[in-house]
Length: 224
Ligand code: DX5
Ligand code: ZN
Image (cartoon, rainbow, N blue to C red; front, side, top):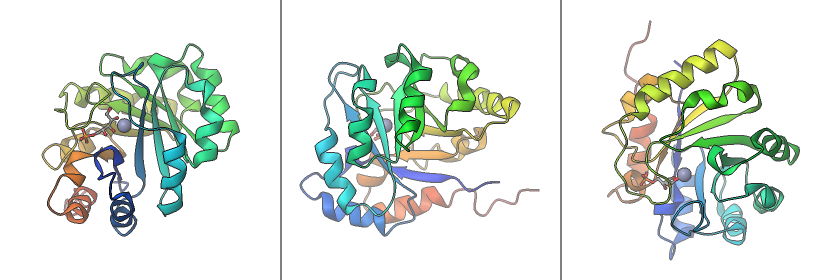
């Protein structure tokens, strides 16, 4: 089985002490930083924008996986790339011309991701799956950290995995929201490639260890 990746969500980090939280992730087994941008329109909450991300870029030694929970993301793609985004993920529900936005993202040199809200079927992406580097399945309603995992995400991961196999694309499946040690194994078994974890990492007593545990799930399982 291919090793999965872990992406701590910095939304749950300590913003008075970002440098030390970033150092912790840099020094950990995490694969990248998950960076949530919220505009108060696509989602009810507001987080931060490209100015903060360009500061984060200076202290991150791992890629920035930028999740745009904003309306009309096409207006800002180049700016987020210039700020340091390595992956730019837009919401299916926020794009009238998703195929065009994906081309726009790839033209900047970033990897292109699409996020789906819990109510959106995985099948909507089938016609353009080969254009997508990463599908982020929201396992909570976007807008806030610390919410409960929506269990219907599990069959949705399996459906998406099947589509990826049928079309033989290199698309990765990322799961975002309510992910922790209590459900990570099931999520990975269903076919996920990347685990986003906010609260379960930064609110734990030992965040480095929490990352290590998430990263090493399935390690001792014998696959034939
Ligand atoms: C939710 C964000 C998530 C969030 C995850 O809108 O997209 O990335 O930070 O946080 P937890 O892991 O606490 O659910
Ligand atoms: Zn996110």
